[in-house]
Length: 384
Ligand SMILES: Nc1ncnc2c1ncn2[C@@H]1O[C@H](COP(=O)(O)OP(=O)(O)O)[C@@H](O)[C@H]1O
Ligand SMILES: CC(C)(COP(=O)(O)O)[C@@H](O)C(=O)NCCC(=O)O
Image (cartoon, rainbow, N blue to C red; front, side, top):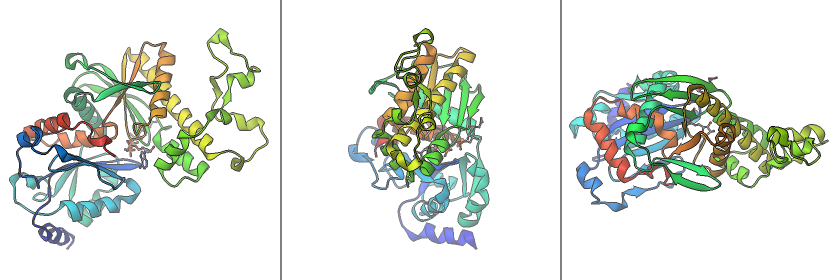
């Protein structure tokens, strides 16, 4: 019996295990947030610093973690869902019943899960781990995660312009309304009006999956990080058709376009007798990143304008704290709004949904616990 396999693993080790675990299984990545049950110290001990070395990064590039019993954040590629299941099985499902709150996972074998994969992989989790995925709506989770972070984590949101990061002071009483733009595989835009009132007002299929998918085909990169790294070194002007290319080096000042503005993304090759191989992968990656970031920034602004929203928060793993991505989005919002609207980014960008699912466990102390942990270690998802 499959669940027997889980029991065997649970009994394998004397320590370890997990009390609350939540998953966000998206089109590209599985995000996991959990609280390990192997810390015997109280939350106060942890927060008040009995272990200041607790913030630690794993050398494994697909996870970030806060060690010593604090909130752990991991990610896996969705195409490697078996790795995620193996990880839960071998690392987390241990030590049955030592503490009451372990019932959430090891007793009842139910975990909160959001994202399309909570539906797609429900049978697989049941079959391989004996675990039932308790599905929580993706938009609910994104909003819950974002509201929680913006209200409780000091320096969660920041602006980014010309390489300068500036932390935003968010007045809790003045948080709403705002536009939440989650750039995952695709993009969702959600107008958030209060803790419980929100509406998904728009979206676009040209998102992080488009960047990674097209980038993989055009540059033969083997990983997302490699593609981002390439884009660092590229020059988009080799690929994009600029206003100056069309106007013989001149600005089109009557409509506010400088000669260096992009007139047509990826437009340059149409007038050059070159093959794909004649272009540098770096330049292609740069143009692609710019095209997609700029487009999302523009659509986000138009939606903010539609509803009179001044603040736009961008989340999702597409961003990856990458300076060029954030700069491009900020410039787009600034340009189209004539400086009226602001793009802001979140330190826990990719974990909004997973955190929202984690917070949907109906235990009051869970939000407090997460609050303390993230207050003390807000850098958690940026430690690698
Ligand atoms: N290690 C990675 N592997 C694949 N995609 C990544 C990685 N890091 C960042 N990304 C980007 O993040 C996007 C997924 O973001 P995410 O918020 O996790 O969305 P989803 O819920 O759709 O998986 C990918 O489409 C890609 O653009
Ligand atoms: C369908 C989705 C909500 C799934 O979320 P994801 O896995 O991309 O994070 C998202 O991909 C999306 O909003 N796509 C854009 C679809 C559209 O509005 O055209």
